[in-house]
Length: 53
Image (cartoon, rainbow, N blue to C red):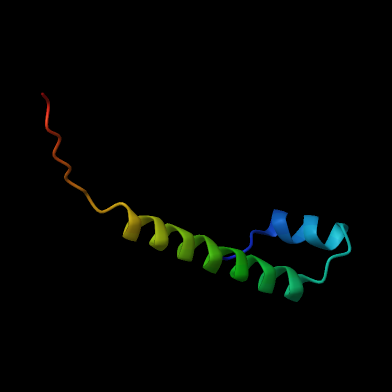
């Protein structure tokens, strides 16, 4: 994700190191992609059969 000028201004105004912010942002995106991939793996359709008496 490419930071916008506005985001860069906010980060610098808060006194956050832009390189650390970028590293954190990339780490968060990787975690999000991993969780989405894990959810996709667990959503395989299952078939169940019941006996009604």
